[in-house]
Length: 218
Image 1 (tube, rainbow, N blue to C red):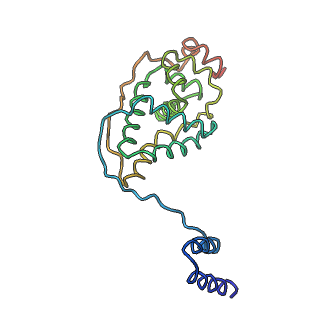
Image 2 (cartoon, rainbow, N blue to C red):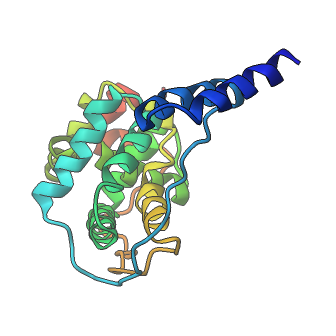
């Protein structure tokens, strides 16, 4: 009964106040009934493109997401989506094209070895997640590893091998922007390169001594 009287009082006040006061009084309704969360309304049309986002812009977005998350990988995924939603849908696709291109470039036995050693084993899906996570570590870490895979032995944090998530963010952001699935864009490389290793015996230990010393299981 008290709540009903309060509502009647608020309504009567709204009818005889200025527009500015109305905005203030609406806050009372928010407190009483809870403010509804605003939903993102997709507005942009779907467009396909094989264009890659400029490398400098791509790595800047990655770095912002990493810095704003303070090393928290799950939060980085949230921060990355925030940054992508600031872009037109076509640029989100261009970001995804660049992401897939980089992930395809390191579809390599050396990188799979690194993921295997760091995690104590790594399936095909795990390796895909690892490459997405590695991109999320930023330009310097990624490019140093391309030059010398053993530089990954300098990693201070590997998120305990929980690498899934970052690769899904571009498509999620695109769907929020358009209400539709992301077009195919550029085709990712799925032909693995490099020299295959044997997980049995000392092959990994001998090929990657620094990684093994840091992460390997004896």
